[in-house]
Length: 204
Length: 204
DNA sequence: TGAATTACGGACTGAATGGTCCAGAATGGC
DNA sequence: GCCATTCTGGACCATTCAGTCCGTAATTCA
Image (cartoon, rainbow over all chains, first blue to last red; front, side):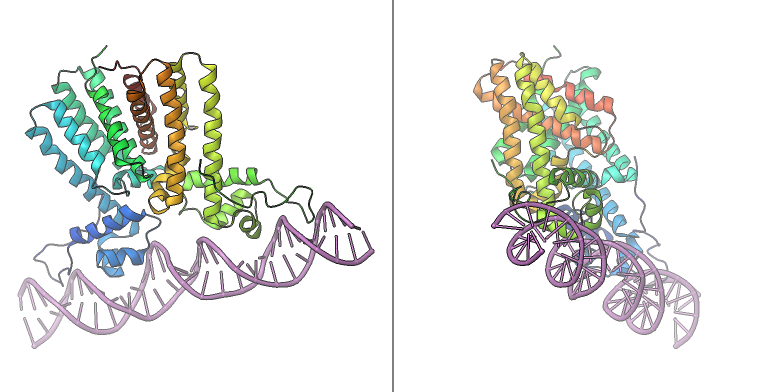
């Protein structure tokens, strides 16, 4: 699992010196909001400072750069997603229904036309940033593995399970992108319903 | 069909005045290349002038703005795609195999990690630009209709045909995005192979 | 050839960019 | 209370941004 280094915790809480006047996580939430809406390039440092409630020097001391803020926000976003989706796999006894819930959560991404922050970041930046691309592949692999495991629990062999899991994920991500073009909710739902052809088809 | 207005042809070829020293289409091809690689915001006017081989005043006289260049490039890109994919539906007698070819062409998008210019533009700009979003929906609808028609030709009823066509398109677009994260070719192909579950499944 | 029209290069603009730096304030340990 | 340490606001920086404008060159038509 690829992690991202920042100076979010550069000192001991009991150490000397003036303590931080802000919560790094909370500031990151503000940055996430902005990056999510506007994208990376379209977001200026002034916007960022305002939405994070930080002065420029605090921002740089904590995150190193505008890019560092983005990576930290991305880390927080993906961690939150995994954390929110993992318990679903335990609470739902039917593995196929558990998959439905996981995919539904992926597809939803808290409504609106801003789509999914992870996807946005990959599309805008991954081709030029190997580190971000590698991080993204790690996140994708975790989701794939989670779905594939559920598919195997439902009785599917190892072989088609992984491929079908990936395909289901790709389908959902496709619909997330279509939402950004304003495709109506009902049409998106109709596409998402077709995922069952992937998860429930016999091996033929 | 939504179209995009520019001054690409502001005069008659036989009219008075000095004729253009460049081909608007060829210049647009240079712009497309750059936007495709870097995205809209990350591309500066200087980059653009260089890759289009145009001076700033010629660029503005012809396309109105940086944004005008993007829209014209997008129009050309989508037109090219439709033009390249339409004949496939006529030359291949088996409609299901025709769909395979259309989707393959969508998924390929001339290799590399830059993905699909249309998708890139939608993800980066559509949420903030209703005109672009509307144009995008029009393009998507054309592709959907094309695939759905082939599905009906293969004997599928109208009802599931459209939904399955949309879902297949979404799946392919999802894999295009995954390519930007550097997911290996073989994995992408394995996902794309699953499309057949959508196009060839019985109505159940 | 002269008039009308258009294309073009490049100087110019004001604003905004990401990032650095420093002086002073705040804090904890002793 | 004093010192070391750290935080923070804002001044400052060179660069770059998208876009405007004008003088000149090129071309066609009459």
